[in-house]
Figure 1 (tube, rainbow, N blue to C red):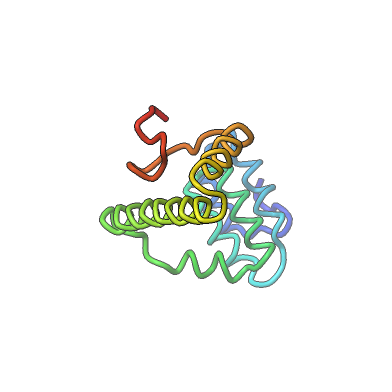
Figure 2: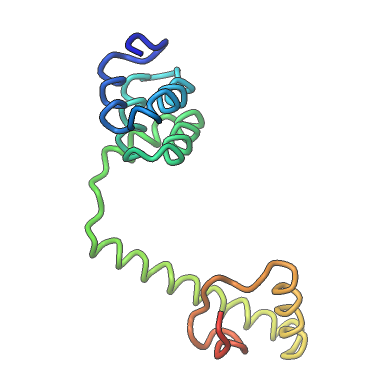
Length: 145
């Protein structure tokens, strides 16, 4: 496998460490999709960021093809602590809750209570229920999701 086209020896060795022997040929093919600016740096960044996950590697290579600077920036950032992850997750849930409440207020103002409920039922029929609902942000919040 040494000498794969466009892939340095060091990058290939990193891929061997990150991926098992079954996935190595696929991983090398995927990183070979990127061959533009700062190729070796980008290859190492996508391998490191993928943490041995082939699906993540494909997403990262696609991002690098779009703009290689993104993956180089992501690699340079420190890994978030568990506390930072928890705070971010809580903030995302709060933003989702606020967005649902604002949408509900808009629908009620635009169509009235019954019209808003009809729009929400129609959306549920078309798109399904949201995977997770915050308490109190919908008329059927008491029902199981």
